[in-house]
Length: 238
Image (cartoon, rainbow, N blue to C red; front, side, top):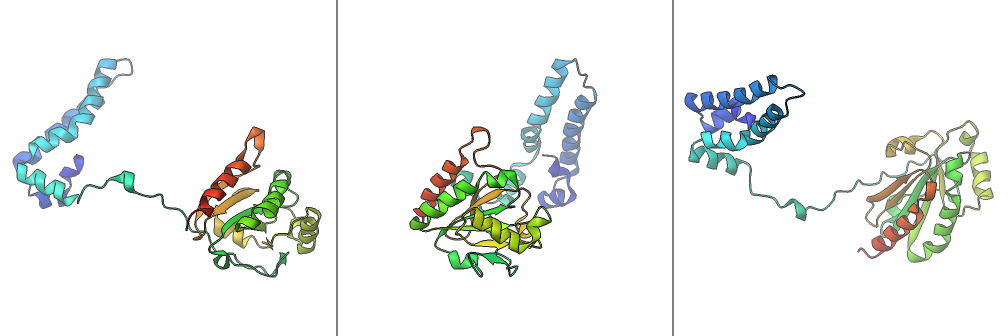
């Protein structure tokens, strides 16, 4: 309501001095109620809240019908926000470090048409290791449905910066899916990632539809099952 006093709005609606004076008085009355507020005076607090909430209707009543009509038209056609679909972020393309295990390279754009489960981890991270069994199960069971699993090993410790040690740890964990060894943390930064581990669910078009930070079964959580349900839903999409 107070935007009506902005110079560009005054000019747009051609508000005369009389209406400007009434609008100023209206807002000043509300401001005065706010200044007179006392913490223990519930009646005045209620008056102030009612005054604030009623400003818009009173302000519009001050305008001429033609001005009100012009104002509403400037807002455009009413939009039913219930019809809006959620906007999902697009997954950043992988930045090839030149170091991989179980692959020599990989690109997300080459996996369009498949649901992708991408996870960041560090092999010496206890919370990451707690998720390893789920990654193996997904690789063994979901791949048949058209799901691709990709790991990104971003170092947290000095040992995790050694590609040879990362490859050895992946073999010990019995990983058979591609793992990009993010030696310089370029992928970590490109994704804006903040936590080991983090799992991302990417749809067939390349959009991130869900992600989870931390252990999938932390303190009784069943996020592994939640992800599997989401994957099944995404597989049904064109």
